[in-house]
Amino acid sequence: MADFPKFQLAVTLLAVLMASTLLAPVAVAQSAADTLAVVGHAPPPVANATATVAGTGGFSTYYYWIVARYGGGSVFPIGPAMVGNAAATIAAPTSISVNWTPVNETG
Image 1 (tube, helix red, strand yellow):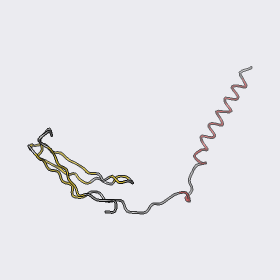
Image 2 (image 1 turned 90 degrees about the vertical axis):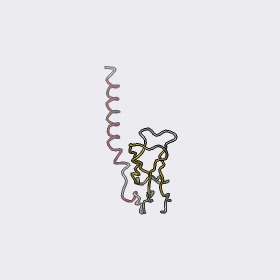
Image 3 (image 1 turned 60 degrees about the vertical axis):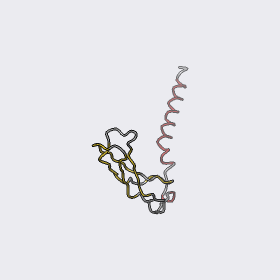
Image 4 (image 1 turned 45 degrees about the horizontal axis):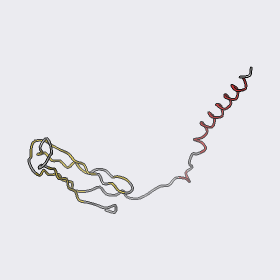
């Protein structure tokens, strides 16, 4: 009989824990007044992406996508910039040059 109060206490604590877990999302739900709408233009992606082979060519094709990363995040990638006459293995003295027109956050 001595263990009965411990069991009852454990069941009571479990019931309180379950109730607080179920009610917690309701207590922290945001109202419409707590939301913030941000209106603005997304920064532009880079433009005019090109890729060229320097050195020994071949029959392999490579694709490159360029992603502009700003302080507020990334924008959609531009590309693919394709090079279709590259060697199967790119090693010195062969290289692939990828170029694009840079932009800033305001365009």
